[in-house]
Length: 214
Ligand code: AMP
Image 1 (tube, rainbow, N blue to C red):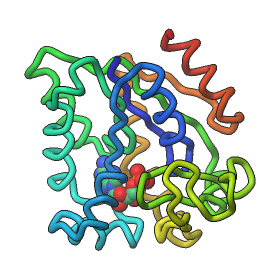
Image 2 (cartoon, rainbow, N blue to C red):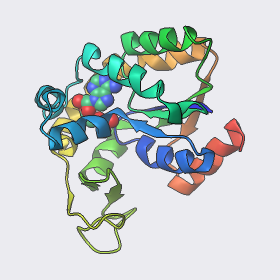
Image 3 (tube, helix red, strand yellow):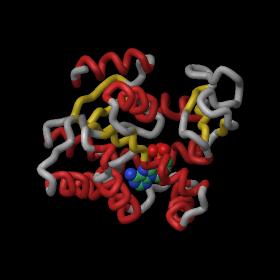
Image 4 (cartoon, rainbow, N blue to C red):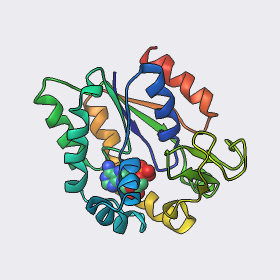
């Protein structure tokens, strides 16, 4: 199963992708997590990406596309994978389609989670992230067992720089301008499936599984 998670930042892509990844035993590939790991490790890619990420801007396509194309060529992706946060622009989608077509492959579904902007801004302000393992929580809807501490790895949880309200508004504007056109792109490819992302996460998951098969 080869899946793309689409939707605005904070629509629930990461949370759903984590569960789907376990359910189908396929790797969850989050470009945001890859960049954050690079920032943490002080790599050259991390230094470049941080400049854009902190401002809520997209990292340039040329820094993202090869990274993803290389990642999905790895052995653990042979039965499929879930892309979370990629593609985010039409040139990225075209690069992905081309890389797969060279191997006679196609994505199976682009899962679009629909959530209105006002809901997103509220959600993001309450989001807390573990920068060590990538888990995300919400102070009201999905709190960790111990306040401020990651359930999975015990690290400290933070409000990500790019989840602060002023940056979120900028990210939403960029989403509408650069990423939302992918809804048309994947509708034309015949693989778009849309869901109400404002429902409780377990309900959204049920809707997704009912549509894409278990
Ligand atoms: P995310 O965790 O997916 O919300 O990503 C956090 C940030 O990483 C984004 O706001 C972008 O700055 C950057 N990023 C992640 N994925 C991409 C991508 N496919 N293209 C460009 N920038 C990206």
